[in-house]
Length: 627
Figure 1 (tube, one colour):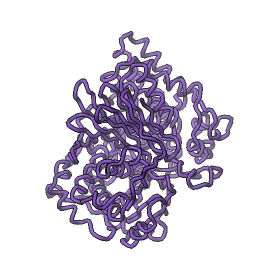
Figure 2: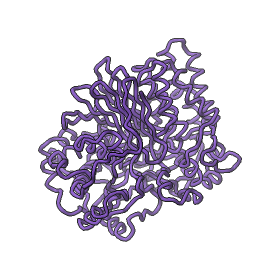
Figure 3: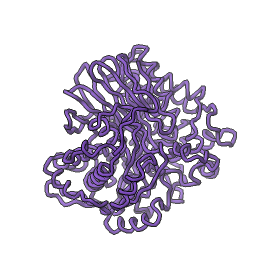
């Protein structure tokens, strides 16, 4: 059984004015600067998010996407903002079959959906913020034009694809290989083309109107109907670029796809537990899997097991397998498919599914039958394929042909070369390498507003830079299946079942806790551990983040080539050796990871008239600020 740590890597922050926590200290400082200048949490979130697009280009970008969960105190409104773009009109299973593909590639141009992040941030600013457009965009423009210090992970990510850039993606080489060389960690790096894009969007928006709201709407139009959309469409009309298949392909995204898309405000999906109402996205994201795990775990006495105990780790892992199996069978865009979310989260369904948790590690992927409906799995997750991959896992748990995956996140690393061979050899230092990952930010202000957001996509190493714009498109369409007739089957205008999963918990209809993490399929495992540590074991935010982490790799990856590692359980080396041996006796294929490598949770909280914040030490770049 693990003891609750008295020492933490940094303090849990507390105060009454405002709190910002994110995966990069410059974004957190930006958000706090906005609060100090009189902005609210929504202003701060937008400014911080635009800075993340500049300072974490290997993790997100202006061509990416974002889901947001937030609470507006003045309106008493808790909402989800969907900034997940849709599949192009030309994106059909038949189109990919015509190319001889049975999976959507994880890099290049074929996997691009409409980039939703910018539209979402503009909607959030216009509807809930108070600042003018210039006041929130100025920080990102400054860092893009004058430069920012490169974290080592960016240098390693660029190094991993340097030859790809030189040989096949010259527009990326122009931006990320200044002078033909990989920029050194810690060096000052600028992206003048990106700065010019932001600046032109701002200038055209300000020229369109002097009114604040009209300027913000004009900025959205400039992006989706103006020069940004026109430049993207012109490039995609002729470019054929190398992708992970080893062949060049042309993209499917068009001007009309961009011009016809709008972000959406939705009600969250909720689940009540321990006096809290946990809010997540609907099943166009994997957010409901967090709630399914809570429903399953609610039938176990986790508090009696204790944090870090073998019983706790085994039970959480086996419940995760069941919930993620349902994700594969049932989740998809509810505009296109009837997802039985009410049944999936019902007490009766959880009671029945809970009986499948045994004393030994399951080696199967077993979705349930909510409302008596028979489940179907995509071809890459069928029982036969799952069993074959299980045999590969037994001999080499990380044997992932075709494309490397980051063992700490499950998200795709670059196909060519992997991490920089000159990157530090110390495993703890190497653990900060995140080649295809995500960002997260949380904000709480003195007015009672709270924001949780998980920006991602548009990774520098996954798609070529659009010439003249300084950013690349996303590859989120790789999360569709091409198996016909499933909830997550590719279709024009459909949202991919994303992994991006911010969280917000309410107490008595007021915001209590906002949290989240990068990490692909691991997001709703790492954030769940944080939440359980806080809810059941009384850890403060920083203690809950610092506590030794683990995750299951049993379920199919959401990322190309959609591999699974049945029974594989990744644990930090700080987990007790006795617990690790007991887990192995129960049939788990335990991979021991570096001591501080799994998860990058950040969080803010409101309770008893105070504000709190904490951020993750793993990766050595996340930070919380506040007073």
